[in-house]
Length: 257
Image (cartoon, rainbow, N blue to C red):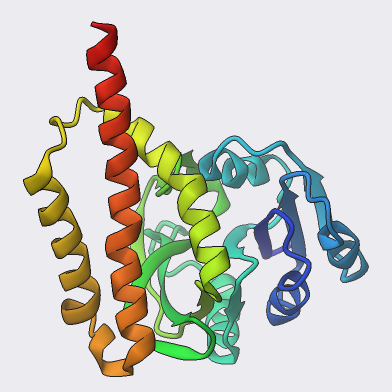
């Protein structure tokens, strides 16, 4: 078995079908489900996926759980709101089926970054392409760490694929605000644990302006008109919520002292 695809889910009934169909080239599909209450599990099972139910703690733990169940030589991690493009399909199949290229029978490249093309607020194509490490030789993947912005731990060199994962994120404002409220608490706790300097007016202004500038100017949000402006303002707002919660937690600690 050459390729196992891992999908992390929680109430993704609207997305899971298209996601699984886009990775039909996999030898096995494993869904690590965080106790969904909708039809996610039923839909995934009917499409041939193996279901592993695990109460959600953080994304790193969910992704690491797959290591115990996947049988493939290579592991591809993809989220329910992502799709493998047809050209990426072809490129991955070529990678996982090729013979080792070095003299000692091993290939020094054990992981691959994959470009991700984001679409915000519907079908609005974001100008900036990001690169994420998502394809791994299983025997070289040690695990994952990080409560929110998780990253893989592996031994060996990383390569880069050319064709993208398609990511339909921030599909509407209701989902965006719900996600911000959920994860801002975790991020604020992490900042507090790292002894972040006390928040003040200037820090709030600097953080919000920096995030807006990065999204709207550096990443080119201005190029797609109103959706780009909304997304960039939302990025600034999202970070405001994180640091406002940090400010609140810092004040509570000061009162206790």
